[in-house]
Every structure is written in C-alpha cells, then in structure tokens.
Length: 177
Ligand code: CTP
Ligand code: MG
Image 1 (cartoon, helix red, strand yellow):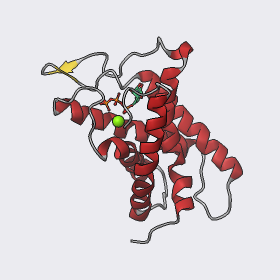
Image 2 (tube, rainbow, N blue to C red):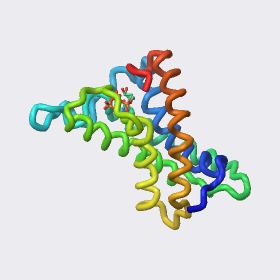
Image 3 (cartoon, rainbow, N blue to C red):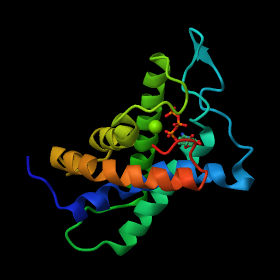
Image 4 (spheres, protein in one colour):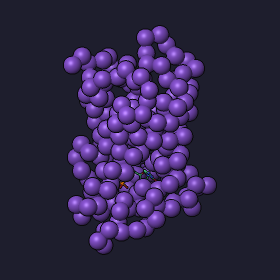
C-alpha cells in the first residue's frame, strides 16, 4: 500500500470534512434553528430511536451542499498533480460523509447509547468511511486507493478532536468529541 502525501489526502477529503462540520455549524445559525426535523422523524425501533435528534434533515442537506461547494471551488483552483475535483464529486463525498455519520448513530442507538454517547474512533472516523464508501462505489473512475483511506484516518483523528473541542467551546456541539 502506497501512502499518498498529506496534501494529496487533504485535498481529496476536504469536502467530507467541510460537509461534516457544516452539518454541525448550521445548527448554530438562528435562521435555521427551527429546521431541526430529525431524519428519522422521531421514529423508534423496539423503543429506541432509529437515529436520534442529532441527525437532522438540515444537517444532511446543508452538509451535502457544502461538500459540493467546496469541491466546486477546488475544481476552479485545481493545482497540478492533485485529484481533479468537481461539484458532483463533492456532493457525493459530502453525502457519503453524512451517511457514514448516520450509520454510526444507527449502530449507537441499537447498542442502547443515547445521543452524544462517545464511541472512540467511530465518532472521529464515521464520516471518512462513509465518504470513501461512496467515492469507491459512486464516483466514476476514482483513482484513490486504500492508502488514501489510511492517511485520511491518520489525519482526521487529531484534527477532529481539536475541531470538536472548539465546536463544543462555541456551544455548537453538546460534547467535546
Ligand atoms: N448534525 C445534524 N444533522 C446531521 C449530522 C449532524 O444536525 N445529519 C448536527 C447535530 O446538531 C449534532 C451535531 O451535528 O448534534 C454533531 O454531530 P454528532 O457528533 O455526529 O452527533 P451527536 O449529537 O453526538 O449524536 P450521535 O450520538 O447520534 O452521534
Ligand atoms: Mg457522529
């Protein structure tokens, strides 16, 4: 497995990072506060929420769009040697990121963990796995391999911790993880 450089990896996963943080950041915007309908519409399976109140349509839609905008801007700039980005790649990566995050919440709820309960490494990497899953299954001719996933995980864990502490301090997140 050949590890890509930090820059190559950052360039590719940026829309996923942006999508994940946008989903959190928009929850702090007063105009969007009332759009907090949960993706699962409050439904339960065997008495436990399907996903929980932390997964909203607002987060899913705004996050996916933010991923698209990010990749569109990357595509305009496009430095030589880096992965070719376009809006549709970013929409897919952003959507994949938020799907990964929802899969994690689904698993947490099935394990009886309430919203916000920490699950070490999964809280930090759920959206990276989701983004790569969608990239490998839905982005045509995608050239990134397992090395990119490994490098993305190495970079995301510490950055996610730092960003989460800041988001918690800004009262955007209920917990600092
Ligand atoms: N968020 C959202 N919609 C999404 C994803 C995230 O509104 N689809 C917002 C919610 O305000 C959520 C916050 O981003 O609380 C942080 O996301 P995360 O840490 O994944 O959620 P938790 O609240 O910790 O819930 P869970 O236990 O389900 O992970
Ligand atoms: Mg999560």
